[in-house]
Each structure stands twice: as structure tokens, then as C-alpha cells.
Length: 483
Image 1 (cartoon, rainbow, N blue to C red):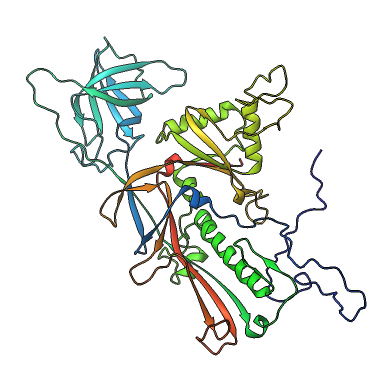
Image 2 (tube, rainbow, N blue to C red):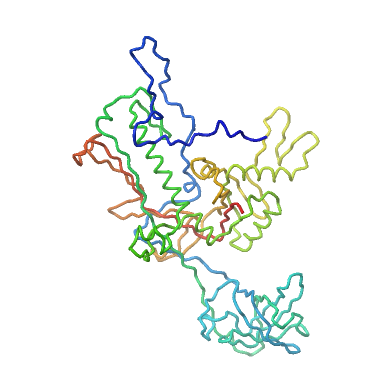
């Protein structure tokens, strides 16, 4: 069984720049002796058509007075290298070359002082050495006896009788778990400097406009219009103006979710910048872009088994280990998750019994779940934006099925404030000062509708906002998309 393709859904826009037959009923002839029975009020056949509210649920809005937003995020605290080679081994000692770093606490610079570049291993520290060969269980523990920062080599003495980790170019992992010194010796040589990660984003200007002539404003219609924000009356231009406003408010959110930065040589960069397109203008870093670049991506379709979610949880363990997370899903992903959770139940003898529900014959059967706990707490919420057929609903190429957002807030160093500040993981920054607030500007121009700003025989309702979204701790987000 499948959903029949016809009758399908209507994708013809209801907003047109001219009056068409699809906008108005045209067969009313009041000279006819038989007048039709009419329903005056417009029927809301698509319900609430707005798709915004995602950012209002998970974030906040705060002002900014700059063209650029910058913030610093913490690096890793502990040090681990995953590409290490044993160059030489003696009876109880070894020399290892550190080729790269898994967690770059210290940026490489080729200098000879720890904390200013090179590797972040110091004399006297104790390390574990692990063989990277699949299936291997070989490891050693050792104390660092010397460090050559220029060559990125460390000399070690094993705590075991001899090295059991294979030499000869085998790839190893080392990590620091402590230190040990002899009695009466000097303290630790050198020190380490913390390495912050600096991120930035820039606001974009979003505009819209609605225009109606003064003559049309004086025309009373026969349809009583309605709108999602409560507007009503018999003046059709009110309907169009309110729809323009609602559409603009939706774009304020979807632009923050979908925005991408323009590549310096792209057409958009040339359009918004100079002829060469090298000034980096154009675009912004939206939520999907940032999570795709710096976060986690599940690219195998929807996770439909606990084993799939276990791989997600294990990745979260390697990131910030945020305790509570919210999953914003499209309809199919939500169904898949309900089926996965329902499959964990043994289906009691009297019929379906999900979770803590007592599904007897006198109650409606609840086939859905709002969340579950497995290592972390996961709460599930449908995201209308991913289901709306006029937006992301039904896409094949570039389809996104869901987004995992950590709950709560994080501490970052705000470059503008010059201090640490608590910020939601997702929040919007809009341009504002004491004299200009560009969060949500609307103004009327023309000579109709109460405006007296020009000789134009029309009313123009203008909308403007300048904003960007800041995705803090993107490494804690998960994007779910098709393979």
C-alpha cells in the first residue's frame, strides 16, 4: 500500500504580484435572479502555515553593534597523540616520534619550548603507549626521560621489563596520565599554554516589502479574511500585508538555519563584494552549515536500531558529553524512532504495552514516545520546517531528517564584552545601538494608509532585519541526513 500521487498537494503560491483567476472568485453575477449561497469567512485549509519558532525554543536574541561576531571556545584539557612511531627500543627504554596530535592542545610551531609550540609532552610525565593495530591488545606504560622539541621525539623508560609494543613503523597512540619524579629533584620543566578556538560569524540583511495602491485600499471586498496572527476584516490588502509579515518572520528563522558563506571566488561573493569577489562578503554561517563543518553528521539515513544510536552516543562521549539533548525531527524520522523504542518492549500478553503506558481497551492507544534515556537524555520533537512541503519537506537531494541540539547554555569568552559570558548553544545576534535597532524594523512609506512620505499613490510596508546565528559548541550537535 502507498499514498496515491493524485489528488496531490497544491504548490501554487497564494501570493501573486497581479490579480489572477486563482486569487479571486470571478463568476459572481449579481444581475442573475439566483444569487449563490456564500461563506463569507476565508477557510484556513492549511492550518497554521508559519514554520518559525525553532530558534525561539532553543535560543535567545541579543544585540550586537559590529559587522563581525567573534567568540572563543575551550580546547581540550588533556593531551593525546594518535600517530606515534617507535624509532628505537633498548632493553627497557625507547625513543618515540610524535607525528601529529589527536587533540591539538598546543599549536605546532617548530619552537623548542613546550607551551610555545611543538609537542606538549614534558620530562617526568607518565604516559600510556597503545598499539593501533586492529585486534591488538598490546600496551606499555612509561615515564618520559627526555624530550627533543625540535625533532618532536621523546625518550621513555618502560615500567614493564621490556617494551611489548611493536617497533618498526607501527602506529601508536600515547596519552598522559600523570607524572613521577625522584626525591630531591627539581620541578617540572616548561609549562603549557591553553589553546582557544576562535570562531566568527557576520550578520546578513534580510528585507521584504508589501505595496498596495490607494485605490485598492478603498475597495471593500466580500471575503472576510483571517490570518495566523489574528488579523481579520473585509479588506483584502490586510490579508496580503499580514501574509507578507508572516513570511518575513519565517525567513528570519530559515535564513539563520540555511545560510552559507559565499566562497571568495563565487558569483555571490562577486555580487555582494568587489569585482574579483575576494573580500569574503556574502552569506553567513547558518546552523546546518556550521554543524556540517564543525559538528557531527549521521549520513546513513535514519538510525533505526539501538546499535545505531549507540554509535551516536559514543561520538557524544568524545565531545562535550552534554547530559540533555533535544532531537528535532521530520515525520519519517519520528516514526522510525517510535518504532525503534516500541521494539524494545516484549508486547505483553494482553496486547501492546509501550513503556509505562497501561494500554487497556478503554483508552486510546499511544503509539508515540517523547523521549528516552540511554547514556544521555534524548527528547524528541517534530520540526514543522522539515515537514512543510513548501520548504524542506519531501526533498531528495540535500535532504535533512533531523538535528540534535544540546540543551542548556555554555560559557564562552565574548570578544566584545571582554569577559566570560553564559550563552545558549544557539542564539541570534542582531545589529543594534542606542540610536538604531535592526532586530525587526518595519515602516510605512507613500501617500496612502496614513503615510505622508512621498507622492507615490500607494502604501509601502517595509521590513528589515540584520542578524546572524551563533552556534556555540558545534561539536555537540548532530545533523541527520541521507547517505
